[in-house]
Every structure is written in C-alpha cells, then in structure tokens.
Amino acid sequence: MTILFDGGTDPDVIIMDGISLTEVIMDSVTVWEKPLSRLYHSDYTDKLYELDPDTLANLSGAGVGAPGLGSAGIGGVLSRLYNGDPLSDKLYELDPDTLANLSGAGVASVGPNLYGVGGVLSRLYQTDNNTDKAYERDLDTLANLSGLGTSTPSSVPAGIGGTLDRLFHCDILSDKLYELDPDTLANLSGAGVAAPALDPGGIGGTIDRLYHCSGTSGKLYELDPDTLANLSGAGVAAPLNDPAGIGGVK
Image (cartoon, rainbow, N blue to C red; front, side, top):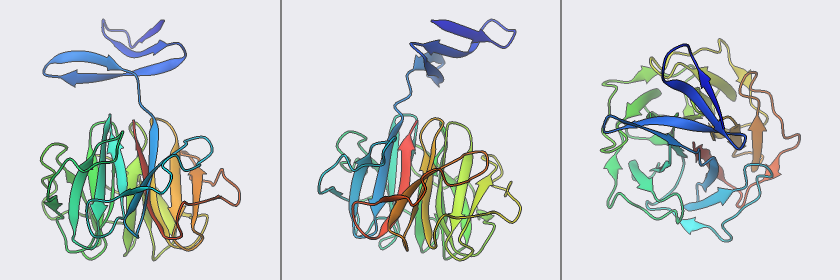
C-alpha cells in the first residue's frame, strides 16, 4: 500500500493494489473507501441499465423500469445513484445494485422540465431545460440548494454529471459539451466543444472516466475529460434507440 501526503499528517490519497481509495468524512470520522466506478444509462422510454465502463456493453438485459413516467438523467456521487423523470419532473434515488427506487413518490424538480441529473464525489446537480438553468440538490432530501439556479452556457440544457471532482454539461440546442465549476456552476469551456453527434442528451462519469450519449445517433461514447474529445470512434449502440442519460457512481 502506498500513501501519498501533502506535507501534513493526513494522506491525500491512499493507493491499495493499484486502486485509489477515496477519503470520505462520515459523522466526523475519516473513512477510506474503494471507488465503485460503476456506469449507468437511461433511455427516455423509461428504462435503466448498467453498462460496462470499458466496452459500454449493456449489463442489464432488458433493463429495469424507471420509477417515473419517463427517464432522462442518471448519475451519482460516492456509492449513491439518482435518476430524473422529465415527464413528471421528479427526482429519485436508486439502488446502485438493483436500480430499484429508494425515494417513494419522488421529489419535485426545481423547474417544470427536469432533464439532467448527476454529480461529483459528494455533490449532486440537475438541469432544467425550461428554466435553462442548473441547480445543486441535497444528497439526502433532494432539496434545491441553489435558489433561482445558474444559467447554463446555451439555451436547452440536457445532461450534467462528472468525475471525482470535475463537473460537465451538454446542451441539445448548441450540440456542445462544457465543463462547469462545481461550486459556482459557471462555464469553464468558453464556446464549448462539439459533441460527437447531434442531440447530446447525457454526460457523466465514474471516478476518472467521462461518458456521453446522443439521442440522434443512438450511441454511447467515452470522452477525454481534459479535451472533451471523443475516444470511442463511431460509438457503441445504446440498449434502446432513445438514449437520454449516462453517469456513474464514484
């Protein structure tokens, strides 16, 4: 086991068997957890799937029915997974193993057209493509933490999600990808980067890998987190033909 220090007495990173462990503060106790690095996908027709992070192959067969009337954003934080329904405008927490709903009737979206859902290590976000804004949500209650929200870089925000500590967003009007500041939700990517295909519906990742899906191509892609360049060539066909969200637990 290798421990890396920043000059203090508490390690920044612990690496065990080649895998970085993540420091999580739980009830004032420091816990080091192995990242789950599991990837998930949602189809607008109300189905949820787990994907292989390396091949983007479907691991869930015919899929699991989403809790709401439809399904758009899916993504998570450390060991916790969430899903958004754009038809009833509700947010739900899901069981990462079974994809079962843990939130009963769900929690109302901030705006009238919820789309993207995803997060970084310990922070959760959503987009609304009626208000054209992004919001931070409470991990436990799913309450809005952002007041009136922050305007997104373009005018039809879709996916939002990230890696361990970097947050990303895609817009289906500009067909662009953007990096956002996790604290302010400000755009860090200027004019943005063209998505691999039109109608970029979802974006999100695992601890250090970033993924994207397109509603027009019906494909899934891995992206370079630094350049947002496509790493998957022509992409991998999604389980169904209306991919709307992609993201993982860290």
